[in-house]
Length: 443
View (tube, rainbow, N blue to C red):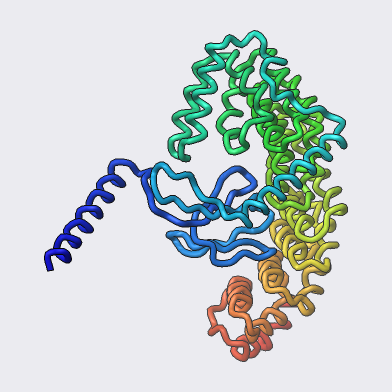
């Protein structure tokens, strides 16, 4: 009995001590979890419940999250039993990580050879001989702390680099190639804030790095330089194999107002990557505005619509529809019968906005054959805007459609066209319309 009581006492005491240690030092943990390292340098911790060719599913505090395979750099199994013990990495996952890292480096080297560029030397002595040992030591110390800090702490630590001046920035530029990619987003802005010619030269050299993350940070920094002369170094990045780098180059060139970038940026408006297309649209509008060529946007978009396909064409047409003028209705009308429903939606939306009387015939001819829900809703709106009473018969038939949204769109258009507030029933409206059709359609 004494042993049992004593054992219980010590177990309680040890548990209290453990809780006290953990409260004093949050780094003291006893956890087993998986860490998914993302290609953008961030990571997500949780319990791995599924790992397939398509992606990985983790259980985190807020629930389950699935991460696409193309967003994952590697997955680690981490076991931390005390504050002194290093994470234990699963051998199988570590071998997979090494294999992927090797493949990544081979791809980057192949990309570097295709570009004909050269890597920045990771040896600071070859490019920063003017940096004094004291500055190097300070930078190295800050980077060491930055590497060990969590995401919340890093922001405050990285600002300490700002106070060290141009020499520190030059040193950072020289060692970027060998730096962990998760630090680049904190270090890049520090380099870019200085307007020194030496810094500009270093940033231009960074655009030819073998690492996509370095090229991406170089693009951001050059855009912040406010020096139009740096545009020449950014233009090649619009064709970079990495999507994020291309997007950063678009943003930077738009910020610099490079007139030379208008045509190559416009081509990215139909890029396969949707997020890049959005950045390209925004960048193109800024570039045209800066150059005083905003009126050229319609022409550029109409040309792109012919080159684009699927969702890219739909986005081009939707943007075009917002910029369109009355004479553009016939251009939009040709896309009312496109194979892509999204393209037809954009065309119907644009025609409805313009409301040119001559566009009534292509709209009315589409009403009986259109099957896509959203296109039908936009067509109903176009019939209303055009006051096209010849479309009432079809709208009345839509009141019996299986889709509730289509019925609502048809009903709202009928009420506005006729001024009647009848019940939203097909037979009621058929009776009414049969009684007034000849009068309403009289020339």
